[in-house]
Length: 353
Image (cartoon, rainbow, N blue to C red; front, side):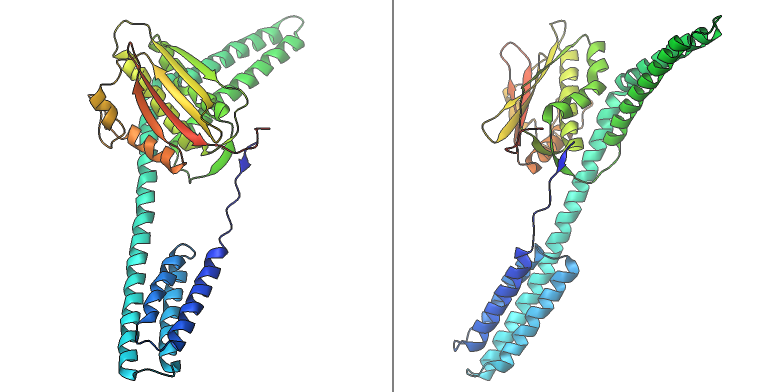
């Protein structure tokens, strides 16, 4: 079972907001210098952006303005005219900072939502390229269900009925139906939009689960698909669907590259290994047409593609996903043809139970 990573406590940020605001208030009230100390309340607003939602940030901003006004009336020394001007400057700075900070925060939220939608579209497009393979993976167990069903009928129609054999046939029907259900479930999980959910997961199991969708595609292209998984890898902190999307995209790209590579031996190898003490490396190596040096420099750029019908978003999204996970992704050309795409993901220190 995956271990859901608990959310980090954020209590320190609200405390920092309060302490910082009170500190500025005290300095602004007791200082004899004719400077706009209250301008530093903008730092309180910026800290509040990371601690509160929109309404909370507005309340913090209003509170800072109230403290600015209160400090103006409580200040025992200084020229009233200068104090008024400094207070007005501070109030304007707090208001403008709050407005701009909220706008930036809203833009970041919109950017993340747009990127999530684009990633979902890319997943659906990848699944569309695997339609024949998915249909084959579903048809296999369904054909076995029909075969076992006919066998069950024959055993029951025998004189006398062979109940034991019929029960065995029913057991095979249930097992094959579950296989078909698992394939459909994997496709549904990839096809539907889902919120980000990072867990400590076994990287080998996560990859193996998604490779079943591409197996028939590889076999149809006369491609030998091999896995070289390292044993005893530590768990990886990741969103299952997003990392599976990256792996599936790399595998589909490799299959398409080898389909355009002529009559040479076609081999696709997916491997995992440790990458230092704090990361796991996943590699997808093919024997396709390879990559030119110019392509290596731009292969992860948005809308860059070497395919005639490609859109150039798959690898760009893959890079975004891996970087959001704290890893990195890169590509290298193999001597003799082919390419290797690899990425790393951070790990925990505890071994997978």
